Length: 304
Length: 118
Image (cartoon, rainbow over all chains, first blue to last red; front, side, top):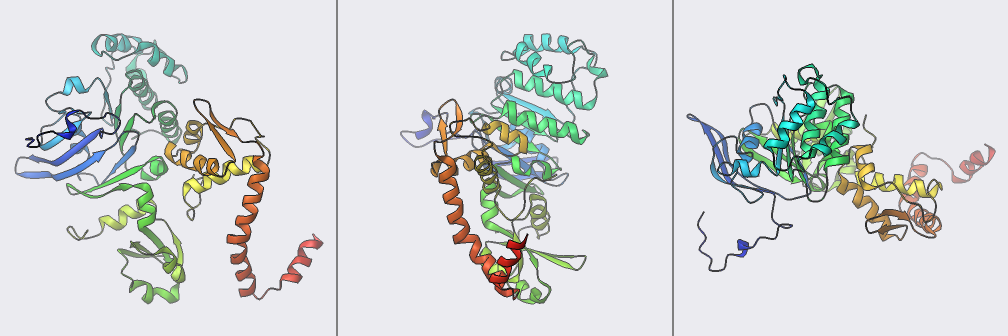
């Protein structure tokens, strides 16, 4: 990156204002196939971001680029650092839980904590133990004998104990039953989230975290098709359950999506005036999964 | 299970729940209200959404934010809130209900009689 300005404004960045993550023209190709087509986004501190997309859309590749786990083209800064070049430095302040995360199965929980105390400068064993007191995980337990739900709790304990500024969760609750999923998110909100900390989550179970999110990013075939605060979603998009006699008129208002299920037609509008639509049926804000379906159905390149 | 309805913004619904705690005297003048964090965790919502709900009540003078201590019911909150909620009902909800009564061909006086009989 070249800087031609004589007095670069960002020479002394204000930590509170600088985004936690910045990506400009983020591209990734595997062989001759381009997986990410140049993503641009900023993630500020104190937010809970949901990264949502189909399997193979590029979610995990994006996360891996942010975590320095894969090479890429373009510029990425995480907490002001280049994740690929400064990965070990970055890992002091960034934590990652993935659906394939594996803790050493042959170790006991307390042995894992002892190991982490040696390898991670910010790991606080007392914090990890304190976190586990509220769970079924015993310090003497062999990790290989823990259930999936307990492993998730152990992961959380480790994350809490390193005081990470950015926590990246890739399908964190995959394979967990509903009780453990709820408990997992509950503890995240109770113990992890503060104004200085940032959470980035990918999941297919969008409905479960919809109200937790402050912002969403929809990714489709390697492109960012939507990136906005949740508040903007509710002002910009409107869902209309159309009264049967108003179908033609409503359709003429150019919904971005229309579907008839069991005799009932549901339309989604972008940028429509909500009070105008009230004349045609029942109006509400689409859920994230409804919006996802609506936007993903559009032809590529159709989105303004 | 979704604890919210789809027609109102979440922060409005949370604001209403807190307001109901004050109106029903569950939490009295000067007493502490649940923390932003605990409400966020209980309802699985973003802490900023809860903060927004509290801010709306702070603006009304019903809730006091004490630095480092959390949220408290302000002095005279119940009376103030009741006045505000009544005005809001008369200005926003009543005209809508009134229109519906007319649309259904019901008569206001006989409705009131029905209500009085119960």
